[in-house]
Length: 431
View 1 (tube, rainbow, N blue to C red):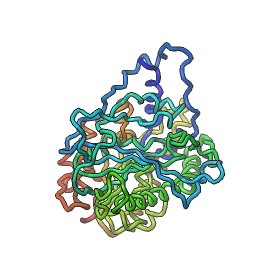
View 2: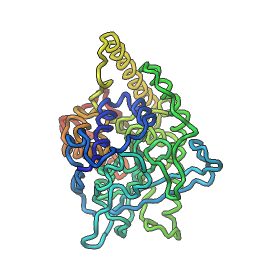
View 3: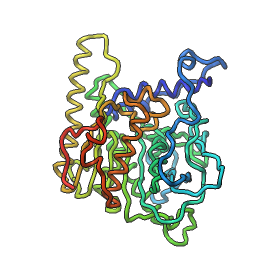
View 4: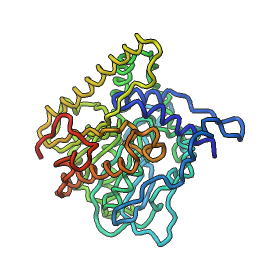
């Protein structure tokens, strides 16, 4: 087995087993960690030998009536400098991946999960998935018609295609899914032109070991530095979608986007971005936050538009310290942090006048809401990948189908009847 598989699994186990409440700290830990060094010989490491091989075909089969196409682009915002890099006059670039209903040629080859390996040079956690294939066909001709749009935002510290399994499934059911990448807080190291995306002008605060203090310092830094850029990236992406959909753009998806029916969803930091955009931007009609702590002004401002907050049940601070007093301090800190996150949710709900849903996914952890469910299932919660995928895609299709398409959504009416793993810890708003 290729030893590059081991870092993928070990990083996932370290970062994703700790849970939703510490998503901000996990992102910081990833950003501060040096890249893993490659083995010095061709012999697999002990960890690699123990880990099962990463399948070339890990993702569930599509269930919708459409085949799926894939387009990768990189947009440049000529009106915005990138404050995260030290290069002078460095314009902000926004990489994007489209999944869309398509009509590929018979026997067309499925696209690689990792389209541009050089973008992630020196990042073993991504390089280890270089052989994995998705269910999409690269640049396949789009299906006839106009399709509602969902804009996806990845988790902090992870690539824009970490929601491939969800995005492709939604596209197979007639949605165009636009996955927006956010350089500087993902795993990209270079852009298509070879320039660096390393955020050397905005280093993360150094962890001190004090859980609450690190949470506060990191949260403030993320809010002021990265979240500002993510929200601007999201608004810029909507501008670009309007431009490419207009007559004469020449884009393969010209005229295929029903932008009057547009929603946003995301995982972790990307979920917070989606809620913030729902509050700020009239073009976003509904939003879902998959296991993400809220940032920005959404909690204070609220919205009249529908939103769904979905979170994992498994929350842990990681390996328990050997010192009993330190373990007790960490446990108390976790309770405090969990209370703060719940208070943010409650404030958003209290300040909103539209329909809202709050769901807890029993047996899930932070990684359950990403492709780690399939790439490294041992690090993604207690629910089977097949069951979790069915649950997540059913909830997403139900929520966006109801609020953007006017369809019935039994999973929202009685979540526990649809899936025993779903509960409503603090009720729901009226639709």
